[in-house]
Length: 267
Image (cartoon, rainbow, N blue to C red; front, side, top):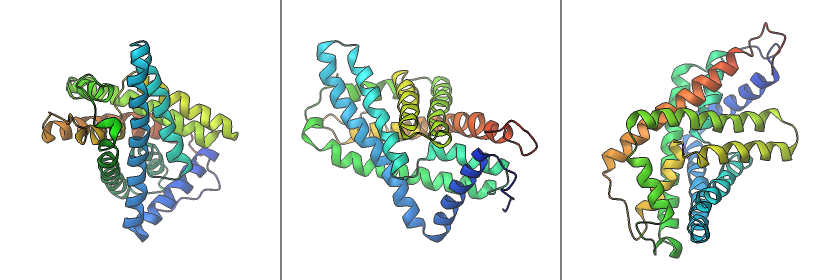
């Protein structure tokens, strides 16, 4: 789909440029696109691993410190993804939905990219989890270790709560993305990302790729995961749908709408 960009807001111009790069790479080489998506999943595994290991150490000092430390360290994972140009499905929900509204990409193509990106994020999280889960810090866990208690909490939530918290999580994530693309100072970009991501993680909200990362590590620890694959996949599906509502509809569609061409006040 072609749409003239001369009349678009700066926000839509940036979203359009990003969307076209994603679409062109997806069409030119699905293998290259898939690897970029894998790396996004892997980055969140690495950030999760560092945060979880620090959380166990901090909890020995004060049981309230671990969650704080985990959220702070995890937030750097999105900074890595943004600066290294990896493909994260939850931010793509915002980009591609806003682009659909402005007729930059067709809805079927946007959905194809989102689903393919999701598979890449899963593959990257599982492979990175295989690596990290077999390292010494994660081969001496107990059932009370931070990463396992977090996973247990996620997999025992009610379905409605998962969906609701997934909506909230991806609003926070895309506040980070919007801050990154709309601010000019590099320090401001990093501050926007770190604060928004810290908050959703500290609040224990449901981000589907973060859940891929936590599960990917836990599977390969000495303790392992006791839940069935079917149950895990179902919770991921619910979180994915909630993330789409939060990131795709509430952030992407609304930001696309209030940057309509005829308005004088636009981003």
